[in-house]
Amino acid sequence: MLEKEFVSAMPKIGFGLMRLPRKSENVIDTEEAAQMTDAFLAAGMKYFDTAYVYDGSEEACRKALVERHPRDSFYLADKLNASKWAVSSEEEAKKEFETSLERTGAGYFDFYLLHALSSENLKFYDSYGIWDFVKQKKAEGKIRHMGFSFHDTPEVLDSILTAHPEAEFVQLQLNYADWENPEVQSRKNYEVCVKHGKPVVVMEPVKGGSLANPLPVIAEEMKTVNPERSYASWAIRFAASLPDVMVVLSGMSSLEQMNDNLSYMKDFTPLSEKEQEVLEHARKAMAEVRTIPCTACHYCTGGCPMHIEIPGVFKAVNRRLVYNDLEGAKRDYQRLLKDHGAASSCVHCGQCEDACPQHIEIRKHLEEAAAMLEG
Image (cartoon, rainbow, N blue to C red; front, side, top):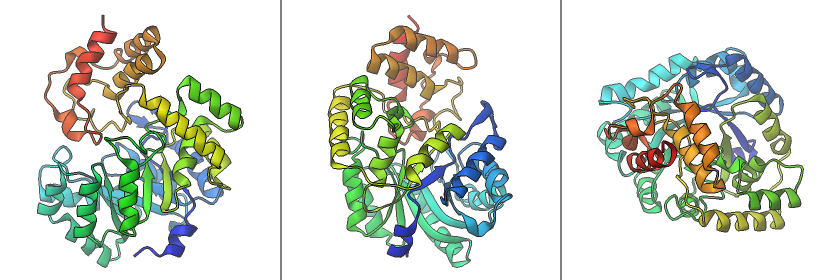
């Protein structure tokens, strides 16, 4: 059980290790990651988050964090993914735990999560006995606290928490854009956690980076109200201002992003009433613009037989939809094609949709992207 005193004492921002800086597409820049880690700890922050399926992240965590800092100076969260796109058997799923321990060199995990639960994959976690497996690892002292991350409806979340009261916390996609989104239902999922007395770890507070580049009308209002703050700061502070949020994960990709986050989270203050009004205006403005709700997690790309950079394609499409900038969208798209397959090369195998936590109709949107950007 996570004590209220422990939750309230947790520094409000966590270092998400999904989007670490890279020297190239497949090589993480561990030197810059180490600099970011040092700055994070020096500011009094403690929570780091990785996962078995984050390409290269666990090894980078060992090099930048575990081998360079005392083990009791930080908290480390890791995850086990039993979805069919990640593993094909119970043995493979359970093997992830020891592999993650080996990759990170952490010795134990302060927080361990069943990864990306939804109605579509919950059967694997149940049939493979993953809940009992994680409880056993906790009894062995290899896990301090167990929980899960979640992408589905409030009804599914309520059923999971009712069936598994041993879950001590829940990781939710939560940001001001998705707060009242009828598909993501951030607010309602948050309220289910509150009802069950489970503290919330927030993922995607900046929605894959998209809220760091808001609609022009919203950007102007934000700068008028608080000209010193970055656009990303509004998103992170929104999530951190919620009373039952334990920590907000930010997937930082540069020392510049780290320094910006620390500038306002080292001495965190909740959003003011005026700032909340600005974000309400932002929600209304964004609801009027149709975009592809991709968070650039890249779960979809690992198994793509045509090597399509799906998040990059969707980012280009959203540039056209949000800013009406077709020329810029086509330029962005053409840069992707130097190293990746075209949207029109999709063979409709569907593996990407099996992996997508946002339940995006990827194949349909790739067809639309091809028509928009390749003509």
